Image 1 (spheres, helix red, strand yellow):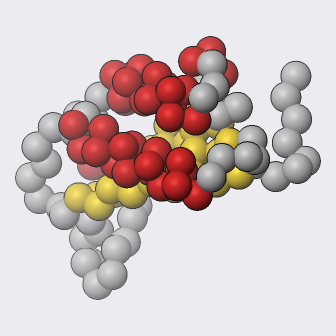
Image 2 (spheres, rainbow, N blue to C red; image 1 turned 90 degrees about the horizontal axis):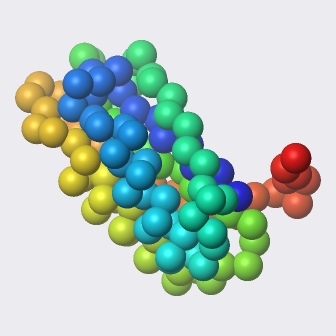
Length: 116
């Protein structure tokens, strides 16, 4: 915990420095939700196709999902979400062509979560 998943459009391969983003994200998450840096784990999933609204060619998107053990206030989660979107914007080089959509969500892990 925290379990972090980043879905991103394939069009962003050369424009998104994923390792640098994760290395900046982990201390932000750890400080904001009061956890240990060593607990942060991020995986990236490249998405070949995305469709947003009525854009036939597909806009580019990045969505960051952060799952935490329960106990954080809605205000803490909102503060983290806003900080993550701001951090994300700083780790994307200028993209020409598709419109870029950035989003993030912080949620509680289900009670069934276990780690080994």
